[in-house]
Length: 286
Ligand code: GUN
Image (cartoon, rainbow, N blue to C red; front, side, top):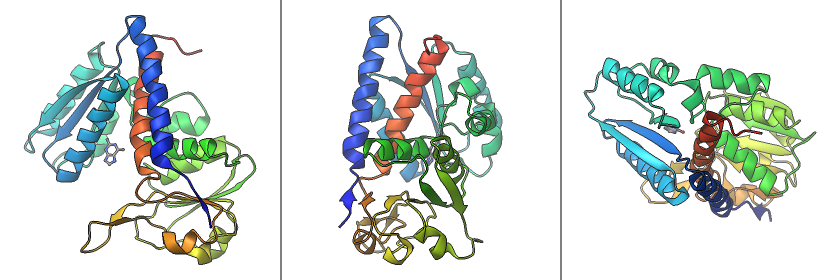
């Protein structure tokens, strides 16, 4: 039976660390401020934004909320971002995705100053990660690295397999594991011999967006399995991941549950990025 990696507990530790560091900045007269922009009223996005604001409150980060109507034009949104880029009291800018169809997401992401890009989605942030220069890292993969390190999983020299190649999770996940000296394989829908490749993984990160696709037959005995997926099981209120947990837990060495694994780490990572934005702005980085 695998040991559970408790994302709720680890994210709480991380948030408490951010809270302490934000308090120290406050003692020196420095506030940390995150601008959160939500366009429209997509129910899932509204919940996510609410959770982000709650986490700001917990950690002592000031959140400034911009809730804009669905009809907001691309031009209006770009103007707001431009104003926030120039506003010296704002450390981080987060535009909740997805945006309404008439707005070009790519253009919006590029409009955010890389110095305030706490989501780590700007091409400059992605480039910095890939050449190993200090910058913002996408919150979910950054959270996965924290989960691994704080669960004493050895990354250096490990065979790490990532399933999924999205810009938000799969690709930055691969870069971060590489930065930690893992030997990295990124798999996707065109990969041949997926099972064989996964069976060789010491660390398997699954981010494919398909419920319960990965079962015990893909997992090496004792491997660490990180499940980034989250799905509602049809007709129920229950959640499941991309991994068939009941099967995988029998062979893995360590495994994240869904819910309570990777999910809570994303927001903790965002809080950490906001703190880092303030540190960089005030040139406090050592
Ligand atoms: N929508 C779903 N996940 C995210 C995220 O991490 N950041 C933003 N801005 N929007 C999202």
